[in-house]
Image 1 (cartoon, helix red, strand yellow):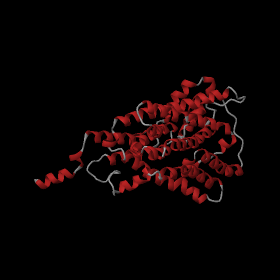
Image 2: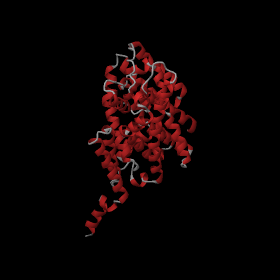
Image 3: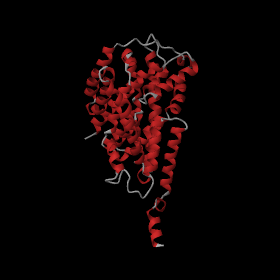
Image 4: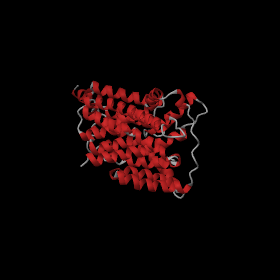
Length: 372
Protein backbone atom coordinates (compact mmCIF):
# COMPACT_ATOMS: atom_id res chain seq x y z
CA UNK A 1 0.00 0.00 0.00
CA UNK A 2 2.84 2.38 0.78
CA UNK A 3 4.32 1.74 -2.66
CA UNK A 4 0.95 2.37 -4.30
CA UNK A 5 0.53 5.61 -2.35
CA UNK A 6 4.07 6.65 -3.26
CA UNK A 7 3.31 6.01 -6.92
CA UNK A 8 0.06 7.96 -6.77
CA UNK A 9 1.91 10.85 -5.19
CA UNK A 10 4.17 11.04 -8.25
CA UNK A 11 1.27 11.38 -10.69
CA UNK A 12 -0.12 14.67 -11.98
CA UNK A 13 -3.52 13.82 -10.45
CA UNK A 14 -2.11 14.13 -6.95
CA UNK A 15 -0.91 17.70 -7.57
CA UNK A 16 -3.65 18.92 -9.90
CA UNK A 17 -5.22 22.23 -8.90
CA UNK A 18 -8.39 23.73 -10.34
CA UNK A 19 -6.27 26.55 -11.77
CA UNK A 20 -4.29 24.00 -13.79
CA UNK A 21 -7.55 22.66 -15.19
CA UNK A 22 -8.59 26.18 -16.19
CA UNK A 23 -5.36 26.71 -18.11
CA UNK A 24 -5.59 23.27 -19.76
CA UNK A 25 -9.10 24.24 -20.91
CA UNK A 26 -7.66 27.48 -22.33
CA UNK A 27 -5.04 25.46 -24.20
CA UNK A 28 -7.75 23.23 -25.67
CA UNK A 29 -9.69 26.33 -26.74
CA UNK A 30 -6.61 27.68 -28.52
CA UNK A 31 -6.12 24.38 -30.34
CA UNK A 32 -9.81 24.27 -31.28
CA UNK A 33 -9.75 27.82 -32.63
CA UNK A 34 -6.67 27.00 -34.71
CA UNK A 35 -7.98 23.73 -36.13
CA UNK A 36 -11.72 24.33 -36.41
CA UNK A 37 -11.89 28.09 -37.04
CA UNK A 38 -8.48 28.40 -38.77
CA UNK A 39 -7.58 31.37 -36.56
CA UNK A 40 -3.79 31.60 -36.96
CA UNK A 41 -3.33 27.81 -36.66
CA UNK A 42 0.45 28.03 -37.07
CA UNK A 43 0.51 30.02 -33.83
CA UNK A 44 -2.48 28.90 -31.80
CA UNK A 45 -1.94 25.14 -32.15
CA UNK A 46 1.65 25.11 -30.75
CA UNK A 47 0.78 27.76 -28.16
CA UNK A 48 -2.30 25.83 -27.04
CA UNK A 49 -0.29 22.62 -26.83
CA UNK A 50 2.39 24.46 -24.85
CA UNK A 51 -0.25 25.73 -22.40
CA UNK A 52 -1.30 22.13 -21.75
CA UNK A 53 2.33 21.04 -21.30
CA UNK A 54 3.01 23.87 -18.88
CA UNK A 55 0.03 23.03 -16.68
CA UNK A 56 0.57 19.33 -16.07
CA UNK A 57 1.85 19.46 -12.47
CA UNK A 58 4.58 17.37 -10.92
CA UNK A 59 6.76 17.13 -14.03
CA UNK A 60 9.68 19.26 -12.78
CA UNK A 61 10.41 19.81 -16.47
CA UNK A 62 8.76 23.17 -17.09
CA UNK A 63 10.23 26.36 -18.49
CA UNK A 64 10.94 27.64 -14.96
CA UNK A 65 12.72 24.45 -13.83
CA UNK A 66 16.44 25.09 -14.25
CA UNK A 67 18.20 22.52 -16.40
CA UNK A 68 15.05 21.07 -17.97
CA UNK A 69 14.73 20.72 -21.74
CA UNK A 70 11.81 23.18 -21.76
CA UNK A 71 13.90 25.75 -19.90
CA UNK A 72 16.49 25.60 -22.69
CA UNK A 73 13.79 26.10 -25.33
CA UNK A 74 12.40 28.99 -23.30
CA UNK A 75 15.88 30.51 -23.26
CA UNK A 76 15.26 31.64 -26.85
CA UNK A 77 12.19 33.55 -25.68
CA UNK A 78 13.43 35.17 -22.50
CA UNK A 79 16.70 36.30 -24.10
CA UNK A 80 14.97 37.64 -27.21
CA UNK A 81 16.66 35.26 -29.68
CA UNK A 82 13.53 33.95 -31.40
CA UNK A 83 11.87 37.27 -32.39
CA UNK A 84 14.74 38.47 -34.66
CA UNK A 85 14.77 35.07 -36.38
CA UNK A 86 11.02 35.43 -37.01
CA UNK A 87 11.70 38.90 -38.44
CA UNK A 88 14.31 37.41 -40.76
CA UNK A 89 11.66 35.10 -42.15
CA UNK A 90 9.10 37.90 -42.41
CA UNK A 91 11.58 39.99 -44.38
CA UNK A 92 12.24 37.11 -46.77
CA UNK A 93 8.49 36.75 -47.35
CA UNK A 94 7.64 40.43 -47.71
CA UNK A 95 7.24 42.41 -50.90
CA UNK A 96 7.64 46.12 -50.17
CA UNK A 97 6.71 47.10 -53.75
CA UNK A 98 3.36 48.71 -52.90
CA UNK A 99 4.93 50.74 -50.10
CA UNK A 100 7.78 51.86 -52.37
CA UNK A 101 5.29 52.79 -55.12
CA UNK A 102 3.03 54.75 -52.76
CA UNK A 103 5.19 55.89 -49.83
CA UNK A 104 2.53 58.13 -48.32
CA UNK A 105 0.76 54.96 -47.13
CA UNK A 106 3.54 54.52 -44.57
CA UNK A 107 1.69 57.21 -42.60
CA UNK A 108 -1.17 54.77 -42.05
CA UNK A 109 1.25 52.26 -40.55
CA UNK A 110 2.59 55.02 -38.32
CA UNK A 111 -0.92 56.16 -37.29
CA UNK A 112 -1.87 52.65 -36.18
CA UNK A 113 1.02 52.72 -33.70
CA UNK A 114 -1.04 55.21 -31.70
CA UNK A 115 -2.51 52.11 -30.10
CA UNK A 116 0.86 51.42 -28.50
CA UNK A 117 1.11 54.77 -26.76
CA UNK A 118 -2.58 54.89 -25.82
CA UNK A 119 -2.18 51.50 -24.15
CA UNK A 120 1.02 52.67 -22.46
CA UNK A 121 -0.85 55.49 -20.74
CA UNK A 122 -3.78 53.19 -19.99
CA UNK A 123 -1.45 50.71 -18.30
CA UNK A 124 0.04 53.42 -16.09
CA UNK A 125 -3.49 54.44 -15.04
CA UNK A 126 -4.17 50.83 -14.04
CA UNK A 127 -1.20 50.84 -11.69
CA UNK A 128 1.58 49.31 -13.77
CA UNK A 129 5.07 50.78 -13.52
CA UNK A 130 6.49 52.70 -16.47
CA UNK A 131 8.63 49.81 -17.69
CA UNK A 132 5.72 47.39 -17.33
CA UNK A 133 3.45 49.82 -19.18
CA UNK A 134 6.00 50.08 -21.99
CA UNK A 135 6.12 46.30 -22.36
CA UNK A 136 2.31 46.05 -22.29
CA UNK A 137 1.81 48.96 -24.68
CA UNK A 138 3.62 47.23 -27.52
CA UNK A 139 0.66 44.83 -27.77
CA UNK A 140 -1.01 47.72 -29.62
CA UNK A 141 1.33 47.11 -32.53
CA UNK A 142 -0.37 43.73 -33.10
CA UNK A 143 3.04 42.12 -33.46
CA UNK A 144 3.72 39.01 -31.37
CA UNK A 145 7.50 38.76 -31.88
CA UNK A 146 7.98 42.45 -31.09
CA UNK A 147 5.85 42.10 -27.95
CA UNK A 148 8.00 39.18 -26.80
CA UNK A 149 11.21 41.03 -27.63
CA UNK A 150 10.33 44.18 -25.69
CA UNK A 151 8.79 42.43 -22.70
CA UNK A 152 11.91 40.24 -22.39
CA UNK A 153 13.94 43.45 -22.14
CA UNK A 154 11.67 45.56 -19.93
CA UNK A 155 9.36 43.27 -17.96
CA UNK A 156 10.35 39.59 -18.24
CA UNK A 157 8.01 38.71 -15.35
CA UNK A 158 5.06 39.70 -17.59
CA UNK A 159 6.34 37.97 -20.71
CA UNK A 160 3.81 35.11 -20.61
CA UNK A 161 0.62 37.20 -20.30
CA UNK A 162 1.88 39.79 -22.82
CA UNK A 163 2.82 37.15 -25.40
CA UNK A 164 -0.45 35.24 -25.02
CA UNK A 165 -2.48 38.47 -25.23
CA UNK A 166 -0.63 39.64 -28.34
CA UNK A 167 -0.99 36.34 -30.20
CA UNK A 168 -4.60 35.83 -29.04
CA UNK A 169 -5.72 39.16 -30.43
CA UNK A 170 -3.66 38.68 -33.59
CA UNK A 171 -5.65 35.50 -34.19
CA UNK A 172 -8.89 37.39 -33.56
CA UNK A 173 -8.17 40.16 -36.07
CA UNK A 174 -10.98 38.90 -38.40
CA UNK A 175 -13.43 39.34 -35.50
CA UNK A 176 -12.11 42.52 -33.86
CA UNK A 177 -11.44 44.74 -36.87
CA UNK A 178 -14.53 44.57 -39.16
CA UNK A 179 -17.04 46.14 -36.70
CA UNK A 180 -14.66 49.05 -36.06
CA UNK A 181 -14.05 49.50 -39.80
CA UNK A 182 -17.80 49.60 -40.50
CA UNK A 183 -18.48 51.95 -37.59
CA UNK A 184 -15.95 54.55 -38.74
CA UNK A 185 -16.58 54.53 -42.51
CA UNK A 186 -19.53 55.31 -44.76
CA UNK A 187 -20.89 53.16 -47.57
CA UNK A 188 -19.46 55.64 -50.07
CA UNK A 189 -15.98 55.45 -48.53
CA UNK A 190 -15.94 51.63 -48.47
CA UNK A 191 -16.39 51.38 -52.25
CA UNK A 192 -13.60 53.81 -53.18
CA UNK A 193 -11.43 52.19 -55.84
CA UNK A 194 -7.73 52.93 -55.82
CA UNK A 195 -5.51 53.03 -58.87
CA UNK A 196 -3.10 50.18 -59.43
CA UNK A 197 0.33 51.14 -58.04
CA UNK A 198 3.17 51.76 -60.43
CA UNK A 199 5.60 48.98 -61.28
CA UNK A 200 8.63 49.03 -58.99
CA UNK A 201 11.88 48.01 -60.65
CA UNK A 202 14.46 45.60 -59.22
CA UNK A 203 16.97 48.33 -58.34
CA UNK A 204 14.43 50.09 -56.09
CA UNK A 205 13.62 46.83 -54.33
CA UNK A 206 17.30 46.23 -53.57
CA UNK A 207 17.99 49.78 -52.41
CA UNK A 208 14.90 49.97 -50.17
CA UNK A 209 15.99 47.58 -47.36
CA UNK A 210 19.41 49.25 -47.17
CA UNK A 211 18.02 52.78 -46.95
CA UNK A 212 15.21 51.72 -44.60
CA UNK A 213 17.72 50.01 -42.30
CA UNK A 214 19.87 53.13 -42.01
CA UNK A 215 16.90 55.45 -41.42
CA UNK A 216 14.99 53.30 -38.91
CA UNK A 217 17.99 52.24 -36.85
CA UNK A 218 19.15 55.85 -36.68
CA UNK A 219 15.80 56.66 -35.05
CA UNK A 220 15.62 53.54 -32.86
CA UNK A 221 19.07 51.95 -32.57
CA UNK A 222 17.93 49.53 -29.86
CA UNK A 223 15.60 47.86 -32.37
CA UNK A 224 18.53 46.97 -34.64
CA UNK A 225 18.25 43.22 -34.01
CA UNK A 226 14.62 43.24 -35.22
CA UNK A 227 14.99 45.77 -38.03
CA UNK A 228 18.36 44.42 -39.13
CA UNK A 229 17.03 40.89 -39.53
CA UNK A 230 13.85 42.13 -41.23
CA UNK A 231 15.73 44.05 -43.88
CA UNK A 232 18.40 41.37 -44.25
CA UNK A 233 15.67 38.86 -45.04
CA UNK A 234 14.19 41.22 -47.59
CA UNK A 235 17.57 41.86 -49.20
CA UNK A 236 18.13 38.11 -49.49
CA UNK A 237 14.80 37.90 -51.29
CA UNK A 238 15.21 40.84 -53.63
CA UNK A 239 18.92 40.59 -54.51
CA UNK A 240 18.31 37.64 -56.83
CA UNK A 241 21.61 36.00 -55.90
CA UNK A 242 20.73 34.50 -52.49
CA UNK A 243 17.47 32.72 -53.24
CA UNK A 244 18.61 29.60 -51.37
CA UNK A 245 19.16 31.61 -48.20
CA UNK A 246 15.87 33.48 -48.62
CA UNK A 247 14.05 30.21 -49.12
CA UNK A 248 15.50 28.73 -45.92
CA UNK A 249 14.68 31.92 -43.98
CA UNK A 250 11.04 32.10 -45.06
CA UNK A 251 10.32 28.36 -44.87
CA UNK A 252 12.40 25.96 -42.76
CA UNK A 253 13.87 28.49 -40.29
CA UNK A 254 10.60 30.35 -39.73
CA UNK A 255 8.66 27.12 -39.27
CA UNK A 256 11.16 25.73 -36.75
CA UNK A 257 11.31 28.94 -34.73
CA UNK A 258 7.50 29.32 -34.81
CA UNK A 259 7.06 25.83 -33.34
CA UNK A 260 9.64 26.41 -30.59
CA UNK A 261 8.38 29.92 -29.84
CA UNK A 262 4.75 28.78 -29.64
CA UNK A 263 5.45 25.84 -27.35
CA UNK A 264 7.75 27.88 -25.07
CA UNK A 265 5.33 30.82 -24.79
CA UNK A 266 2.44 28.47 -24.09
CA UNK A 267 4.40 26.49 -21.51
CA UNK A 268 5.28 29.71 -19.69
CA UNK A 269 1.62 30.13 -18.68
CA UNK A 270 1.79 27.91 -15.62
CA UNK A 271 -1.30 28.58 -13.57
CA UNK A 272 0.52 29.75 -10.43
CA UNK A 273 2.40 32.34 -12.54
CA UNK A 274 -0.21 33.24 -15.14
CA UNK A 275 -3.57 33.39 -13.33
CA UNK A 276 -3.18 36.72 -11.60
CA UNK A 277 -5.06 40.00 -11.50
CA UNK A 278 -2.23 41.58 -13.53
CA UNK A 279 -2.75 39.07 -16.32
CA UNK A 280 -6.44 39.92 -16.49
CA UNK A 281 -5.65 43.62 -16.75
CA UNK A 282 -3.12 42.89 -19.53
CA UNK A 283 -5.79 41.05 -21.52
CA UNK A 284 -8.21 43.96 -21.13
CA UNK A 285 -5.49 46.39 -22.22
CA UNK A 286 -4.67 44.13 -25.18
CA UNK A 287 -8.24 44.33 -26.49
CA UNK A 288 -8.20 48.09 -25.98
CA UNK A 289 -4.87 48.34 -27.83
CA UNK A 290 -6.11 46.50 -30.92
CA UNK A 291 -9.29 48.54 -31.09
CA UNK A 292 -7.45 51.86 -30.75
CA UNK A 293 -4.81 50.87 -33.33
CA UNK A 294 -7.47 49.86 -35.86
CA UNK A 295 -9.51 53.00 -35.27
CA UNK A 296 -6.44 55.26 -35.50
CA UNK A 297 -5.47 53.81 -38.88
CA UNK A 298 -8.96 54.20 -40.34
CA UNK A 299 -9.45 57.73 -38.99
CA UNK A 300 -6.05 58.87 -40.23
CA UNK A 301 -6.90 57.58 -43.71
CA UNK A 302 -10.07 59.70 -43.62
CA UNK A 303 -7.95 62.66 -42.47
CA UNK A 304 -5.53 62.17 -45.37
CA UNK A 305 -8.44 62.20 -47.81
CA UNK A 306 -9.17 65.80 -46.80
CA UNK A 307 -5.95 66.80 -48.58
CA UNK A 308 -5.69 64.24 -51.40
CA UNK A 309 -7.12 64.72 -54.86
CA UNK A 310 -7.00 60.98 -55.49
CA UNK A 311 -8.76 59.48 -52.49
CA UNK A 312 -7.66 56.36 -50.67
CA UNK A 313 -10.11 53.81 -49.31
CA UNK A 314 -10.18 54.36 -45.51
CA UNK A 315 -10.59 50.64 -44.92
CA UNK A 316 -6.91 50.12 -45.71
CA UNK A 317 -6.04 52.17 -42.62
CA UNK A 318 -7.06 49.17 -40.50
CA UNK A 319 -4.17 47.20 -41.98
CA UNK A 320 -1.70 49.59 -40.36
CA UNK A 321 -1.47 47.13 -37.47
CA UNK A 322 1.36 44.73 -38.12
CA UNK A 323 -0.60 41.46 -38.12
CA UNK A 324 0.82 40.44 -41.51
CA UNK A 325 -0.95 39.51 -43.74
CA UNK A 326 -4.16 38.88 -41.78
CA UNK A 327 -5.24 42.50 -41.37
CA UNK A 328 -4.65 43.14 -45.10
CA UNK A 329 -6.81 40.12 -45.91
CA UNK A 330 -9.54 41.43 -43.60
CA UNK A 331 -9.49 44.73 -45.51
CA UNK A 332 -9.82 42.85 -48.81
CA UNK A 333 -12.73 40.77 -47.54
CA UNK A 334 -14.49 43.75 -46.00
CA UNK A 335 -14.13 45.83 -49.18
CA UNK A 336 -15.52 43.07 -51.36
CA UNK A 337 -18.65 42.84 -49.25
CA UNK A 338 -19.65 46.19 -50.72
CA UNK A 339 -18.11 45.91 -54.19
CA UNK A 340 -16.91 42.54 -55.45
CA UNK A 341 -14.83 44.21 -58.17
CA UNK A 342 -12.83 46.24 -55.63
CA UNK A 343 -9.41 44.71 -54.91
CA UNK A 344 -7.77 46.34 -51.90
CA UNK A 345 -5.28 43.67 -50.90
CA UNK A 346 -2.24 45.08 -52.72
CA UNK A 347 -2.96 48.56 -51.34
CA UNK A 348 -3.58 47.26 -47.81
CA UNK A 349 -0.22 45.47 -47.80
CA UNK A 350 1.59 48.83 -47.86
CA UNK A 351 0.38 50.06 -44.45
CA UNK A 352 0.51 46.46 -43.23
CA UNK A 353 4.26 46.10 -43.80
CA UNK A 354 4.75 49.70 -42.67
CA UNK A 355 3.10 48.63 -39.41
CA UNK A 356 5.71 45.88 -38.96
CA UNK A 357 8.47 48.47 -39.31
CA UNK A 358 6.59 50.97 -37.14
CA UNK A 359 6.03 48.57 -34.25
CA UNK A 360 9.71 47.60 -34.23
CA UNK A 361 10.73 51.27 -34.23
CA UNK A 362 8.26 51.98 -31.39
CA UNK A 363 9.73 49.07 -29.41
CA UNK A 364 13.22 50.48 -29.89
CA UNK A 365 12.11 53.94 -28.79
CA UNK A 366 10.37 52.60 -25.68
CA UNK A 367 13.36 50.45 -24.75
CA UNK A 368 15.67 53.42 -25.28
CA UNK A 369 13.58 55.67 -23.03
CA UNK A 370 12.58 53.17 -20.34
CA UNK A 371 15.45 50.66 -20.41
CA UNK A 372 18.66 50.80 -18.45
